[in-house]
Image 1 (tube, one colour):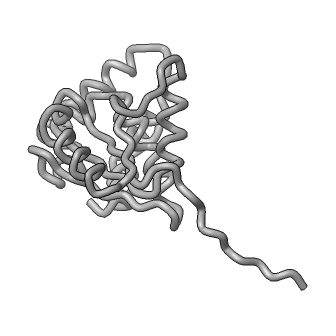
Image 2 (tube, helix red, strand yellow; image 1 turned 30 degrees about the vertical axis):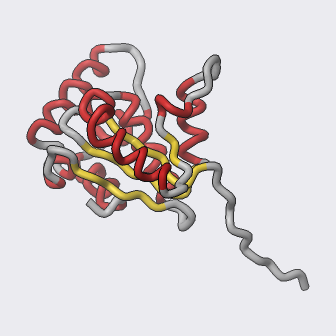
Length: 161
């Protein structure tokens, strides 16, 4: 009878940073990134790590899957970016496994605004949804976030919001 053992997965990155660049790149996130790297923590930050000539979306997805921890910096305009929401969808998928852990940070936005898509965060999200409902393509985040508001809250609770 063969025994099974669980072999821990090795990750390329210790931490993947998900953030809205216009809100936090040159302030909070740059300082956080430097602090993590100075402590020897291998950190993925899109403007530091994306390889030239590679398809950005595929590289982001792969980097999320290859990260042990996620730090999601929710800010007022985070939900206005389809890139950020695509990252969030992938993070939620990966975080549902025992090998991945997500940590939210709320930068100039309240946790309840993110959980309930209200306030400035909710306004940014509503504008993005309206913009993409007019277009022909549907993004994976749109399917996840517009099915039901209740479902969104449940997914965000997975992130311990």
